[in-house]
Length: 144
Ligand SMILES: CC(C)(COP(=O)(O)OP(=O)(O)OC[C@H]1O[C@@H](n2cnc3c(N)ncnc32)[C@H](O)[C@@H]1OP(=O)(O)O)[C@@H](O)C(=O)NCCC(=O)NCCS
Image (tube, rainbow, N blue to C red):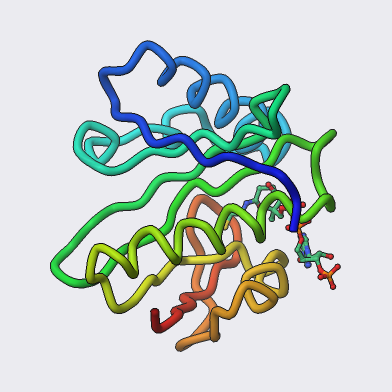
């Protein structure tokens, strides 16, 4: 297990600027997604997390809460910090966090080419491939 800390914040925290920078770097500059798709109304009330390796902010993720379910979105680890288990360890920590709060399921829409990462975190594919922002996606879920 890597030594990462997952720090919860909300839209009004000044550190939300760091999430803006991470999303732009990963989803717009790297993946070519339009900047208009990076932020939406859910940002104002969902849970945001910064992922910190003890020295650097290495990524971020958000969870949109709906009933007993949670939707994981905008998961990203900055390129230079990938394949160090930071992504998986972040999900392990957040599974424990939300399970303790009584949530029973996490779902997400994975970029299709990334689905094996989520499988390694325990998610299962559900349904058919679909397109969003011009990229193939697939729904996945995990029971807590
Ligand atoms: C997907 C992402 C979050 C993975 O983060 P990471 O910290 O590099 O992943 P980890 O090091 O924790 O990897 C855990 C396991 O998943 C595998 N894995 C990581 N990225 C993968 C990918 N893109 N495709 C398939 N498997 C992947 C690793 O090889 C590792 O497997 P192992 O246990 O057999 O060694 C990161 O690559 C990323 O930010 N990508 C760009 C943004 C993106 O696509 N986000 C998802 C949007 S749905």
